[in-house]
Image 1 (cartoon, one colour):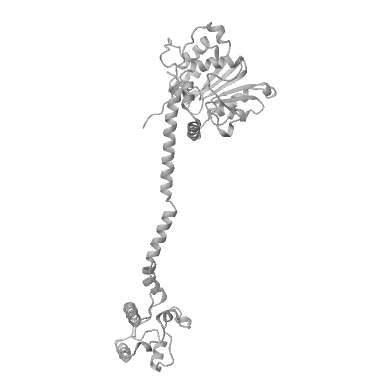
Image 2: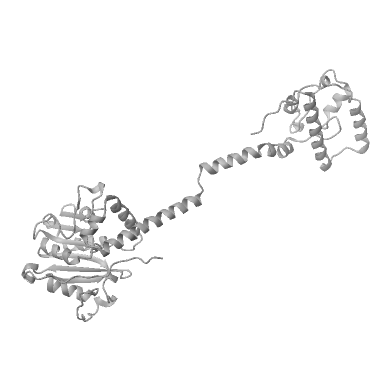
Length: 396
């Protein structure tokens, strides 16, 4: 901040007068309306007569002198020095002109602003801009922070997603807690927004086509791996819908039931439909289908939407022509044909519909019907494993 100077001492006033005269001389040199040399000499001789004046002869203070303005409209933009009674007539005539006592032309207010105000206010302008910079973050910084937050969120999602695909449902439930569950599904919801077709929306349309609206109150649906929102329960409020996931969010704690998909709190032969929308993730899928066979009614259906690349040797033309199933190697990842063959032979599910979802055939839809219970098929024998490729994101 600049200190406010007090020009009470005579030396300070004389110093300021000399500085102002010097600045006005610079302006007069560039002006086209300068006095002639003869008029300058006359004005200079008159000014020399006043050199013997004392400080008491100065009419008024410098502050008052800079504030006064000529009343005439033509001279309203120039600073003028008021006259005093004890001054001579010649001096008063000089004051009527637009020059000072040295014969130099007055500076206009605009030039004074350009010359002095920029120097005086430069420090305050810089300080104000610095304060504004500190108080208001740059837009580029906000974008970088948002991008870093998204990158961190996706890295957490990728880690948890890989764990879900490579471990059993029991291990995943033990690993997850409520905070990780929320972080995972927040990142998952951001990814799903970019998909042209949401798998859960496709399943809802298929259910609407199959369920008779008059009998919907008698239909029971198990949405296994529903995520953070019970979409099936919201789409069919009149049906008996049960939503399950590893954890339930606070917003839907009274709707979503926290449970292991291989050990659901439902009775035998209870449900008409079991929904798996991208939820066949754990490595113990054989236990999941055993549980589905237990809770489904006879002729009950399973609706599955999965990533097509999880099935080995999966081709886009499976809807048009069948591919002969090779000899099953249970240690390797199953193809789509062998997967449905094992479900029919060992788990009691027959495939009645299969299609790839538009527009890019990225997902495959399977509709299975329960033809028999596992107890009547296996007679206590061990069920063959169901191994699918895990969905792992490439590290870049």
